Length: 325
Image (cartoon, rainbow, N blue to C red; front, side, top):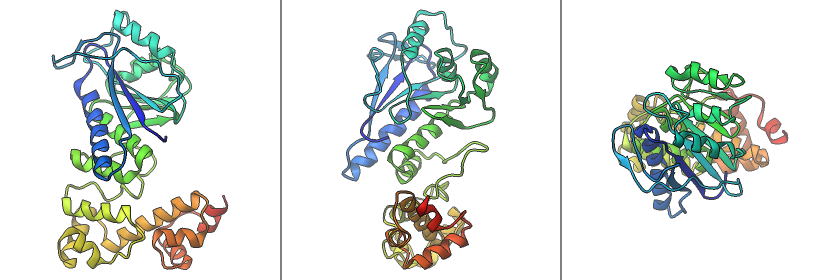
């Protein structure tokens, strides 16, 4: 998804505060980190609803909500549907108005996407957007979701599920997990890792979900100096990194850096570097680069060194096969 993403949080009375506040903060921090790098902000955060004001789940009254906007998919947009405290009264006028608006949307991957948090999946189901799709919701609402849309393949015990333009999460804090994944998709995993670090949030996936990107592996810690090194390596994997150079980025000695990597990241510094370079090369190959070009872009001394790392880490196939795919 390229260009500025319009993130519209559609709020009903009683919306769970953490369902919308946590994800919104993640997007705000992503914009902040991008601005610090001299790059344009990627997310335009909006709060909308069928009424101009609504009480949240904790009693704070939200005023100045924008009207539910017209979204035709001509520009990238996410519609974020938070859950509510208690059951959703679908006969209440605000809920009916929101459902009418949702039914007029035409989700399309990369253009108009739905992001549901907790029982927000029930709203997407009632609007007809989960038929034939996989989705999840809070464990207390799994049966409600099955009843709301029998054609939905409801996934239990999942942090979040993505199926085309529809992304659903289990609820409350998992909404942050899901938005971090969407940030990684839109802006790259390195930025998502920085946002997670700022929020002091672990990067998670649910059972049976694909493995985390190598750029996010070994980042489930809170050590600021180690994150600083990992950020630097991820952003410039082809630089002339040595343990000494990485230690200078962390402002520690090489021996201390090795201890920090093993204690907090569970991997040695040079092994981490090789993983990042391998992920960079793999991305280049998938984008059409030749094996030699991908090796140089990633920081390998030769395509032979790339092939050796490929075998060492047990990647399927060969670099050449991926290049020709």
